[in-house]
Image 1 (spheres, helix red, strand yellow):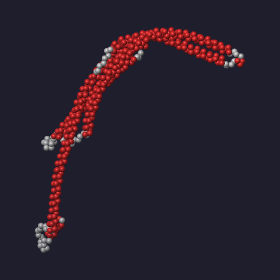
Image 2 (cartoon, helix red, strand yellow; image 1 turned 45 degrees about the vertical axis):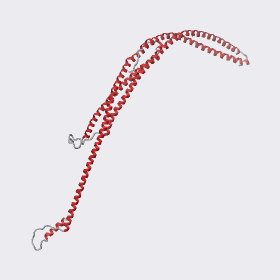
Image 3 (cartoon, helix red, strand yellow; image 1 turned 90 degrees about the horizontal axis):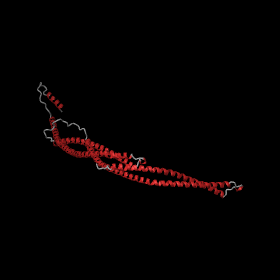
Image 4 (tube, helix red, strand yellow; image 1 turned 90 degrees about the vertical axis):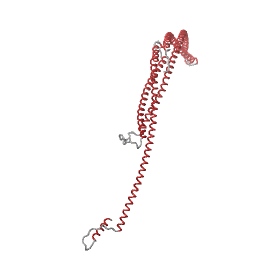
Length: 421
């Protein structure tokens, strides 16, 4: 529209007069349409700007209210999470303190049990082992067949094995106790480190809860608000729970170890006393057996001499019977030889011939049996004479064994007394 208006103004200036000379320029003239159009344009622009301003004002007020609500909501949510966080940290701190106190008590108890195990090891080494070895050495003084692996020797070796086994168990328990004390103290160290960190973190969060936005000391110090966290909540929880779990495992292991040591020391005393009693009973049975065998040997010595004479008489009877059977065989063979001279058809296998053959076979079988019995009697005679010599040797051996077991060993073993550690 403005170019058209400009054109009209120029045209107006040119129509000033036909025969007149140049005159001054007059103000531009507009038409009523221009005037009306211009008013409408200005009015429309004014209304649009007013509406835009009103909309901007309303939008600004809405944004202000929204940001206020958002800020308050976020502050309330942050403070809520901070209170939850402090509660969680405080709970973990209480749990860490509780487990630390329990661990300290458990450490003192384990030290007491360790000293008990040391006492048991010393007693087994200086008392039980020395007496058992001395008894084994004394029993090496037996002679002859009595120097055998009898029940007493086996009981002494079992006792020696039990002593060494108890020593091994006690040594293992001592090592386990020392290792458990080390693990428990390591777990306590981790608890102390975790407690120190959580105490500091709890103090920081409690301080943040007390801060208000109108305080004058906000924003002072180094700005670390853009510093990123290095660890996730999962890692934080995992580390704390790992420390608690490690300490709990150490406490459970320590309690189980103390119960095991209690049972072990009680069992060691019972096993040693039972084995000592069994060995003493074996000594008593062996002494009674040795005395009984010695008495029986003395009684059997006389019986053996009687049997020697009896076997000698039986051998004489067998030899006489064999001579009789030999004469009967000669008679039977003579009869068969005479019948072999029968002439012609008379040389038949009649009943007489069969009976002679059967008699000869029976006589030969009888001679074999008698000869076998004679050999058995001769062997028995040799055995009886050997037994006679053996009995005389055994009587002397048994007397020596009774002296070693009853006088030497049993006197020494009376000093073996066990008590609870």
